[in-house]
Length: 280
Ligand code: NAD
Image (cartoon, rainbow, N blue to C red; front, top):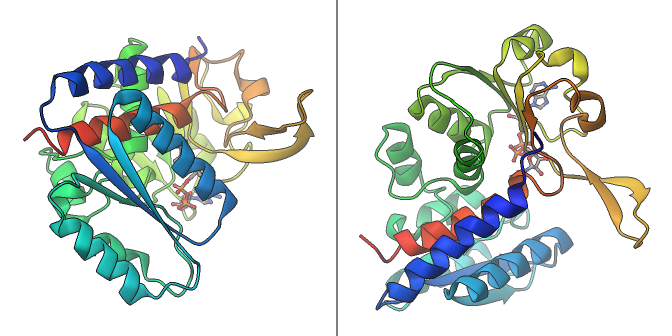
């Protein structure tokens, strides 16, 4: 089975749209973007489009790359105080002279729809989430809606970033999987990966997971996104993930493609968090 992330994301957004229609106070997402990183601009446009589709109000605050950390913090504080704003998202990465952690910590935990604030991260790890981290929560939805059982399975997560690897391990644990988190210093990585019933790759390296690292019949979730040197007929660059999809697809019971797998559900889960920001 090739897991259709686009279709699942469309389902989730439809559900969000119906919920928003019933809300008296509509959610409003304010996005802060600093600088002119091309990929970040695309991500922000995708989030705005999803807001428009689901009926969530959105505002983008585009600041020049030279903006000082103090000015970004001042804007965050202003949005924290603004009653109309229910969700605040700072698009990462920020320019090098701005301390990302300082900015994340300045966002009111009640408005932190990315679920990056330490208080919200802590709530996820004790199993009492206010918001759920978007990419990992999207992966759990992909598995659930594809009727893939997590309880009792061995899930191996490759990657321990604060955005994907660590929170994904927490959410899989909450689903009663037995979880191994691997990273750049893990010994015998291939042997551990081969044990996995569910193998999640969030390494940030193109085609890192090869066929010899995957058990026959495993479920493979590919979080990575990379541009390749190959172009499609329409002139767009082909994308690939952290998994060598072509050589693995015949061996597994289910796998997410890149694009069209994990990516679309990340934005859909952000919309769910925007609803949670007004429904308490
Ligand atoms: P990151 O660079 O912050 O973390 C990568 C992790 O991989 C690190 O914890 C590191 O320990 C581990 N790693 C690196 N080399 C390794 C090796 N040789 N063996 C084992 N582990 C190794 O990256 P990230 O933010 O977690 O993102 C990972 C990938 O997912 C990237 O390609 C990113 O673009 C993509 N991503 C996609 C989405 C989405 O919505 N689809 C969201 C976030 C990130």
